[in-house]
Image (cartoon, rainbow, N blue to C red):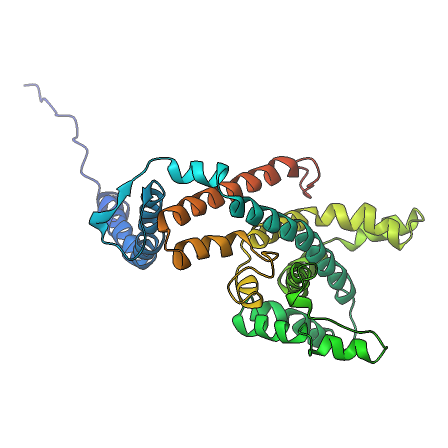
Length: 324
């Protein structure tokens, strides 16, 4: 009699590994739901505060609409707002010119002051923390209305600056009311608030290896040569980061121009920044459709400038890992 044996059937695996495999998809789904729950406040804010208003403003840029009319009164005009902006509105081009002058002068001066002070504060000495806090304080206050009002009082005809000049027999003037100097006071205010890029520069200086300076000293390099050959190349990523941020910030100047000019861009439109002109069109002249078109041109311009900075940065920004 022959005995036929069946091949052993594999028993289903049990234990923690099998349980984890069977439960993994469900747990991943639960983790995904939990992640979306925690992200929901940010996603809701992004939709309600940023995305939806941007889409509405894009639609309004092709319409003739003021904020006092009903939505049913909106009139579609197509590209008329953009055509008027570029071909029939001299105030638009004047605002562009004032903003470019402000950004091209204030940004490098602000970065230069920030880097210079950061180099001084990079050395260890008694009270260095106090000086860092004092230099950062103007940036902590930011572009507030109070700071702009104080700045206006300083540069007024009876302000502190003219009182100081009077000690040396120099007759002052109303700096904020003179078309030749009004924009200069805005530039000085922007440069004075160099604390934020200074802190970033200071953090970058702390990351420069001391071995590079020691090697440069062995080669006979002086302080200026070490700054050019070691500090600037090693600090170029930080310089690039600050350059992008401060360039964008320079184009967005509004509060100081509004307060110093009394909301008019004067005297003689010498402080008529682009954002101030946009505000006047939308909320003073009630041309919300035109203001929306200006806003989108402004957004695209800042995006283009940022792209140009990133494209040119590859030629002078050097990273420690060798990837430019």
